[in-house]
Amino acid sequence: MDGGAREEKDFRGNLFRGEDDLMGKYTAFRSKLPAFEQPKEWADKVNAWKMEFIGTIDGQHANAAFLARAYADIDLKKKELEERIAQYNIELEAISQLGVEALEENGLQKIDLAAGGYVSIKDTPYTSVEDRAAIFAWIKKNKLTDLLSVNYQTLNGMNNERLVSGKPTIPGTKVFIKTKLTVRGVNGDGE
Image (cartoon, rainbow, N blue to C red; front, top):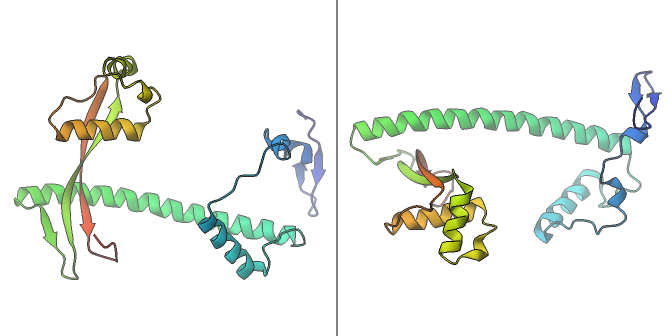
């Protein structure tokens, strides 16, 4: 065994590695750093669910084995839903590609839905970095040094504004256009 872990048996007699192996590399900081605080709205929802689930927001006297099983069960459900969502994303992308082609072939930009709302074609530019040095040179040349730690969303937004105003894109970037279907006015999306 490495790292001071020891083999132990659970109540069924199955071997597992002992507690020494369960400590994370940041566990020692738990008592040294302040605890992360969730935004109040989120924390309120979490506490309300705790109350509904076990009747308290305090886990000190709760059944740890019960909570571990409940966590594992919900984690599995979440993974299954994420897999379904990943498949839905594939299906939406495939239908979007087919739909854009069909709408364009018929000279249409949108289709009204019988139940209300509509599906339309939407174009969205996306920036990718091809040459970081060229981007930083452009930032310095244009005296925008506060952007030296520019994140993707900022860079993408700046390129989008430049496209709309007829300016060339930022050197060192390449902009792609993502054309897809979008739905509005259905299922309470309010758009």
